[in-house]
Amino acid sequence: MWIDVHTHLEMLEENTEQVLREAEAVNVTNMITIGCHPNDFEKVCTIAEKNYPTIAATLGVHPHEAKFYSTEVEKQIRAKADEPYLIGIGEIGLDYFYNHSDPEVQRDAFHKQMALAHDLGLPVEIHSRDAEDDTAAELQKWKGKVTGMMHCFSGTSKLAKAALDVGFYISLSGVITFKNAQNLRDIIKDLPLDKILVETDAPFLAPVPMRGKKNKPAFVSHTAEKVAEIKGISLEELSQQLKENVKKLFPKWKF
Ligand SMILES: [Zn+2]
Image (cartoon, rainbow, N blue to C red; front, side, top):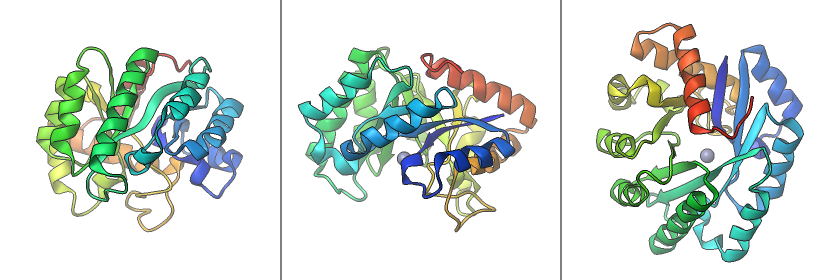
């Protein structure tokens, strides 16, 4: 069995039942759907509420949308905190590649949402692009207080080390199957097995051999197979380990 720890079900054109059927057919049994923009929170929550515990959810304001973070939005997230399906905060973080929100505004929203996660006792899903030093500095402030994962990790070994140092998990996406991702595969060789997760980030970044198609949770098995190959372990061993990792990082998710 495989668990997709980061997907955007509200962005897929297929209805959720179809997505789940296709996932089940290839033993993708569970998934976490991620809120990025306050406008989508209700949709994300409805999908998780209807399908929990097969589907769980996180809510957060993506660095692209950081300018929309406010005390009002914080209240919206807090209002869902007691729902069983709300198992984390995210995706949050920094993206200096696109800078859709001003970097200063991004850092402020990131910090405030780390504080929110701490207050609610929930793990975080982090997005980091071209912002490694600032991401690492923020995570360091919460060492021992907030746990979480680096979503769609495609950074340097320095960022991987910084994340592991604060007890974070490294979530691997279809990017690790891309031809030009040898650096990333080299980093994976050194990652401890008990700190790895897999995700699709669907509808984006479909793994080889599905590259170019619209991604979906069913495709997470291709990423998992690549991880098993890099680590030189069986699919069974990897599957068991990944499930344990998910249970550890997201203790609220009872599945
Ligand atoms: Zn995402």
